[in-house]
Length: 90
Image (cartoon, rainbow, N blue to C red; front, side, top):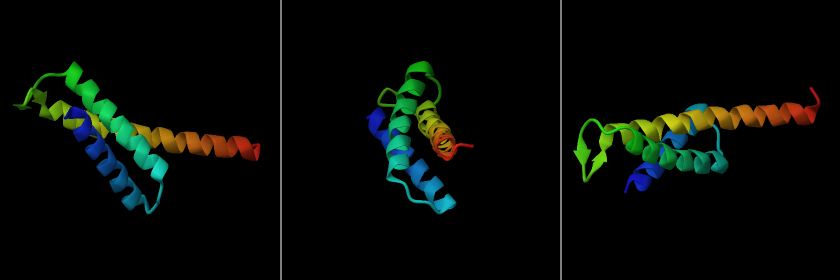
């Protein structure tokens, strides 16, 4: 259940970024979905405060599944630009 929440919120975060930036990238959606799931599970394991539903701490799961995909978006475009400059020889 935590993983599904993380995947959905990660994909929603990635889709929101792509809409705002007016870009299209399936690789970024897969990346944000993966990191959303990882962030949700990690936050649930590390933090246990706030509202609890079915043994899941909702606030840490929401925060982890939104913050880690944002970090992955930054890393995705940083790496993309780095390799683009590396190929150009600059």
